[in-house]
Every structure is written in C-alpha cells, then in structure tokens.
Image 1: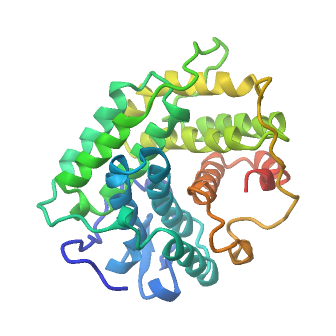
Image 2: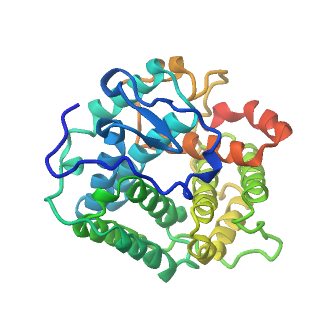
Length: 331
C-alpha cells in the first residue's frame, strides 16, 4: 500500500492503553493488501498495517466540514474495524474482505484525504477528553460524542505522528457538533458499576443490550447496538487510564439506559428483523456474503468491535452463550 507523504505511522504504543491484551499473540493484521506486518496490543507493526486507523482519523477530523453525524460514523468505523481484526485475530480472508469494503466505499473519498504536514503534538490529544467532559452529563445523540472521542483518542495514541493540530482541532469540532437527544432524568435504579471495574461494567452493558434486543424485536436494533458502543466506549476510556473522562459521561449513559428500558415509543417505526444466522463478524463467510455497498454508515464494523471487546472483558460463559443465541439480531 502506498503511504501519503507526511503520514508515516509510528510503531510505538503506550502499552498501558492495551494492557488487557497482554496475552495476545503477535500475528498478521490485515492480509492481502496489508500483509507483511505483525501486531501486538492492538498495534500493527509496519506502516501500512495502520492504514485504516489513519484514514479513520482523517475522516473523524474532517467530518465536521461535511456531515458530522454520518461522516463521523464512517470515520469511527475505520478504527473500529482495524481493532476488531486485531483483537479477534481475524483470518486473511476476512481481513482482506473488510479492507476491500472500505476501499470500495470510503477510502478514496474526500472524507479521508490526507492532511497537510504539521509537527505532531500528542499531548494535545487531551483536548478531546476535555471537550467530552464539557458536556458529558448531557445525552447527546445516543452517546456518539463519547464513542467517537474514545476511538479518536485511542487511534492518536496508536499513531502519535498523526496527532497534528489540524486533526485534533477537527475531532474537537466534531465532538462539539452533537446535540441533545432525549435528555431525560435518569431513573434512580439505573446504577452501572464503575467503568474502571471492567468486568462488572461490561457485564452490565451486555445484559442491558441483551434486554434491549428482546424489547425492540420488530423495531430495529439500534438501541441494543448503541448500548454496546456507548457503554464500551466508557469502559475502554477507563481502561486506557482516562477514568475521569469516562466518569464525566456516567450521567449521560444512565439517561441512555433509562430511555432504552422504556422500549419502543408508541409511534416507533417497525423494521424487519434480521433472519436467524449462525454466521458472525469473526467469520470470513460473513464478510464475503455482505454486498459491496451493504455497509450503511459503519455500524456493521462498530457494533461487533464493541460486542467482542465487552465479551472478552466480561469473561462470563453464561452471558456469552445467551448473547450468541440472539447476536444475529444486531449483526
């Protein structure tokens, strides 16, 4: 894969960020077009191995200039897809197909074009966490401010050379773009474990998302899917050492759980359920059967990344079995 001038990717990584993956084996990340590198703790060795992450950062930083909501989703999905491939050791057929889907849909678009050369300032990434904290208690468009912020922060730490002023400014503007959505008072009995308690918090999120699947059968599974992504973003922030940023969003997350527990609204649009299937996003066949344009705005990558990450943290076989029986609703 050719590299864009000035966008050389660092192989260094803050291992504290990926401490939970210390047992991960070194192996190939993205085969086919991305073959030739290994990965450790979520970081791929070799510049081209982090190509999707850099494209995702470009997109997140530029989304506020285009359509902050849909293009922000697309940018976040690049990063989530990379991490899903690495964390779950997807095989060459699955990973090359995933990259093909990005190449067909967004990789060469204006959204992902390179940024000018600038001196990076990795310390300035903290501005994204500060932007998140500024309105953390307000439920902003299903928690996408937290979802996108976490993925951007994680990606910048993976590629410190990409932490340039223009990219960081762009991500901050994206986080400021979100507006309140169903910002209700949270019910008193919605009391998640501390996000720093990774296992307990992950179990809580998975149970709430599982209940949401059942509650929203026939109405689409966006509530369940975003329970996974919103909740996981806060667990991941805390795991990266940014517990204060995660906790600043605790009230907003409680509001989202409260709204989700209420189920479909009386005028909710009915949406056909997915057909039962044993295929999962960790299977190459799952991606081979997906049409070239059947990627939506990126949930197809973000939902499974959060799902598998939470299952790993929860380490609960019974919960995993319960989810496996119904996961096709979300995927």
